[in-house]
Image (tube, rainbow, N blue to C red):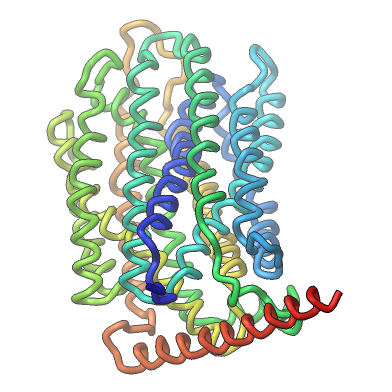
Length: 479
């Protein structure tokens, strides 16, 4: 029996989830432990750390939409997204390892240059892989429920990857002085995670097939500048991108500050099983939040469901800000995990709707440009989070050279709490206000008409694709 073109097979969803696991293994460790590695082990100067991320913004402003444009206009027998994942997945893992192979006992400027160069290399390959990976979800179906289910598998895989990338260092890295003695075990974890990440990502690269009718035809090329201009004039997209910037900042900031929060604020040692309790509850309640997100999407639509779940997340962050013990903090993270996971299932379905609308206006399927431009706007949130963390550490007198039995000063503890709770809360509130103005409403008749028109357009593209293939077969027979 022929499967409907907008129904995604279970095997495809599983391969997508395994790919998400592989992607999260490296990106999760990068987000959660890079700050700890460079501040506590390498002991890079706070201001040089912040400066490297600010300079990196310049490259970030160029590579994302450029890579997206090339992806949109690639046409191979394997598709236009899969070949990039095949090639750049292993290169991403290699550059990820290099990021942490810093020279030892060197000058501060050496650490700065090493961080900047390897950060740019790793981010370039991550950008290509990430935008092509996310584009697959939008391309394989235009049905909101199918996209949400696809993201459900990705969220489960990503959640497992997140637990591994956080738990492994917590289990093996000792919260002792000098902290730099953890370098060998940290590098071992980095290498293992990089290898596993490339292996699991290969399930997506070699286990998913793209839809041939959505490959660009010869006359379907807007040109780089026209494509950029059309994308940046899309009001729905700009609203989504600003919202996603806020959420990206929150996720990156929380993941990078969590080890400091556990070790310096809550004073939980690496030998204590309580060190993993916040993550365990976060992941456990995340599993509960995933189906809730899908149900809320069906009842309220993705926009309103995300806003309602944001209220839950804010509640958790406020509790984190005032928490002083591991139990109270763990309950807070359970609430945050419940709300965040529901949002995760839905966030990129919002952008996928924007892409559907754009295809009707331009006639061209442009996931790469939209995800690339989205990254152009949102990925600088990583730099903003890193820069703010460095500045807060500097202003609150965080001590990188604690002796045995010493604790951080009260000012540094206060700074970590700000970074962990109050500052993310402010960014989420701004994101909610912006998203409220998002115009596409899945419950409206206009939205349903847009989806039907998009489906009809795909039927026409499929017909043309079959005609082209028939012509090629005829030419080959005549030869």
